[in-house]
Amino acid sequence: MNELTTGVIEELNAKILDLKRRRNAVILAHNYQVDEVQAVADYTGDSLELSRLAVETDAEVIVFCGVHFMAESAAILNPQKTVLLPASYAGCPMADMVTPEKLRKLKEGYPGVPVVAYVNTSAAVKAQSDICCTSANVVKVINSLGTDRVICIPDKNLSAYAQQYTETKIIPWKGFCIVHNLLTAEMVEKAKAEHPGALVLAHPECPMEVLKLADHVTSTSGMLRYAQQSDAKEFVICTERGLLYNLRNRNPGKVFHIVSDAPAPWDLPMMTCQNMKRTTLDLVVRSLEEMETVITVPEETRLRAKEALDRMLAIP
Ligand code: 13P
Ligand code: SF4
Image 1 (cartoon, rainbow, N blue to C red):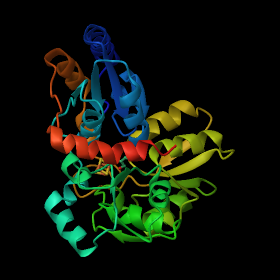
Image 2: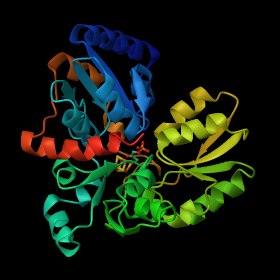
Image 3: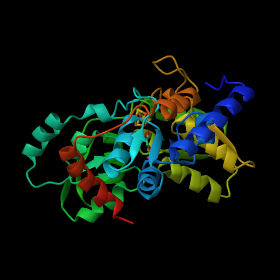
Image 4: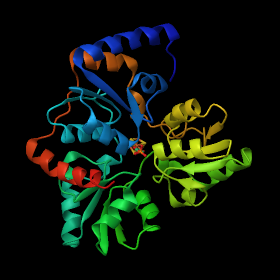
């Protein structure tokens, strides 16, 4: 994945810096992006941090290095700014597991029960939801509603994780992340045996059998904070491997192992999100040169989806 030579990277970085100035653009990159994209970004973060940054920035153009739903959220929150997704075909298979039609049907079975939509959903699905959440705030969001029951879409694993920490009965959707859901207890046990003494950090998109073996479960940026604050020197990481970039940069004295390097069914090692890896420096250059691909949301959908995102962002 990191096949570019230093010279080529420097050349592309210089182009990006120049274009960024000319376009008055800011580059936001998710923690799973390839190393060189994270390196050139103005900010890296988890879904919640990037949503907040998209609202706070003064830049006229936001280059969103991530997947479609993330850029779409930025566009929902910032109709006056131009939001560019350099890899226009970078989607999230989990987000595609729930459609507005299927959600409408489910809601009919539970009248009055609020819908909590993980940000990994389309704008059209958010527009039919009451509030959004991310892996960083799911429990707070559910508890903020003060209801006996909530519908949680689309991640069954995030729902099972949250159910441990709330009295509210969660009605889950059956979606899952195709990367995290492949992880098994056996793989974690193997990593623990290979690295005795290492702490296990896991993302709540992992199945419960994996979460049970973890020392700490949190969002991607939550893992970055935890690793920095911990006295431990060695960690097994149960999330997408792009997080290793910031974990290692910010903690030079500590050792981080990705939980498994076994081949995934799609011809890449485990814990690799193909969609997150679609953004390259070349595409960032092209997106700023051509102002492509602009992400927009029809106004009626945008306004309704924004309500759900705003409610989440209002929670401190
Ligand atoms: P975070 O919000 O924890 O960064 O997770 C986003 C995501 O897509 C995880 O698969
Ligand atoms: Fe979607 Fe999973 Fe990739 Fe995150 S890691 S973008 S949830 S497929």
